[in-house]
Length: 485
Length: 147
Image (cartoon, rainbow over all chains, first blue to last red; front, side, top):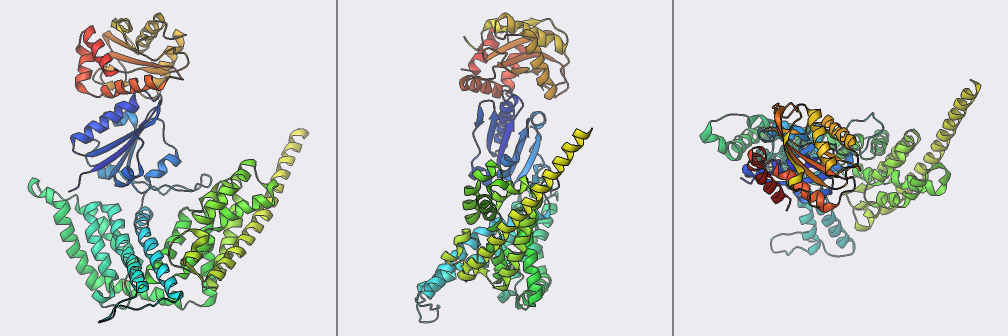
C-alpha cells in the first residue's frame, strides 16, 4: 500500500517557540510511523516550508495546529481534504496519539466561498462536501472530453469527413477525436462515484465504487434503456462510501487486519454492491433516470420557463456558495446524460454578476466606493473568463440591492436562455466558450449574455440608488433625532 | 553580542512561584541590559502565559516575549531550586526554564536560530541535558542548537 501522506500547518501567538516545537514534533512522530510529512510553519519570521498545491493534493490528512487561528482565505487551500484542527498546545500534548484513529478525528473541510453576513455557515462536512469531492474529480474529464468533442464537431463543420470505424473502413480524424472526447463523458460518472466514496471511506472504497458506478451506468451490461447517470454516481458513491467507512472498523485480529483494507473490503464490497446494482439498484435507477430525462426533454414550455428562472436565480444568488452549487450540480450532472441546455444557463448566468457590477461602476461611479471602482477591471476580466466570485465584494458592500439585482437578472436570463435552447457541453473560458465550440448556438448565447448584462446593470443601478437614498434618509432622521434631544 | 553565553544562565533561581520566577528572569535580562524595562518584560511574560501555558511538560517551560522592550534577540536559561507550579501540559511542576526574548522587529537570522532551538525542545535527549546537565553541558547544547 502507498504510504500515508500528511501535511500540517503550525502557528502560535508569538511565533517563536511553539510553532516550531510542534512542527518538529509532528515531523518526528509522522516519520517514526513511516509517513511522508510536510509541515508549514507560520512563525515570526514569516511562512516557511509553504505547502505546495501538489503536497496538499497528495495528502491523506491535514493537521492544523493553530495558536492564532487561520484566515478563511488561507484555509481555502484545504478544501475537500480531511482536516484535523486543534490548538497548538493540545498538539504538543497529544502528538504521540494524534495519529491513532486519525480518520475519526478528521473532518472533511469544505471552504464556503461566500459568506453573506453571518447568516451563512460554511459547509464543513456532510453529504454536499462529498458530492463536491466527486464533482471536482469529474470536472477535468468533462473539460478535456468536451473540448475534444468540440474540436471534432468543428472539423466536421469545416467540411472534414466524419467517418466512423467499421470493417474495412479507416475512420476519419474528426471521428477519432470525437470518440476520445466521448470517453471523458463516459468516465466522468464512475470517477464521480469513486471520489464520492473515497471522500467518505478513503482508499478501500475507491475501486469498488468506480466499478459499480460504471456498471450502473452501462446500458449494454445492464440491459436497461437508460444508465443510472449522475444519480447512480451519487447513490453508489454514498452507499459504498459509508459501507466501507464502517467496514473498516471490523477487527479481524493481527494476521488478517493488514489485508482488510486492500483485499477484503474491496472484494466484499464489489461483490455485494455489484450484484445489488445489477439486479436491483441499476435497473431501478436507470428507470428513474429515464423518467427524469424524458420529463426534461418533453417538459412543457411554461415549466421550462419556471425551471430556467429558478436555476438562474439560484446560480446568481450567492456567487459560488451552496445555493449556487446546488443549481450548478444539477445542471452539470445532466451533461453525462447528453442534456446540455440546463448547463447552458450556467454558461450565461454565472458571467453576469461580476461583469454587471463592473459595468455599473463605470456608468454610475457615484454609487460605488473607490475600492469598488478600482477593482472593476479585474472583476470584469475574471468574471467574464473564470469565476463569479469577484462579484462578492460588491455584494458584501450592499447585500440587499446587489443580491436582489443579481438574482432577478439571473432568473430572467435563465428563463430566456433555456427558451432559446443555448447548450453548453463543458466548462470552458466563460465568454469565449462559443469560439471554441463549447457553447452553441453562438448568436443566441451572446444575445442572452447581452440581455442579462443589460438587465443586471439596470437593476443594480436602480436598486442601489434607492437603497442609498433610503439609508441617507435614515441617517438624516437619526441626526435630526440627536439634534432634537 | 552572542545570543547565549554563560552570563545568561542562572542555575539557582530562588523564586518559588511562577510570578517570582518570571521576575527573576526579567531581573537577569535587565542586569544584562537586554531589555529597557524590567517590569514590562514581566508583564509580557504573563500575557503570553495567559494565551496558553509555556510549560510543555517534563518539568521544562519556555516563557517567552516579543516586544519593543527587548533590545536584542536572546536566550536566557535558568533552573529553580524549588519545583514551580506552571499549569504545564502534563500537569507537573517545572524547574527548568529556557526563555526566548525577541524584539518586535527582530532580524530573520535571529528568528531562524531561535526556531531551530525550539525544534530541539521536542527531542528527549536535548531536554534531558537541559534538565540534568551541568552548566557547561547546557551552554554547549544550546549553543550547538543555534549554531
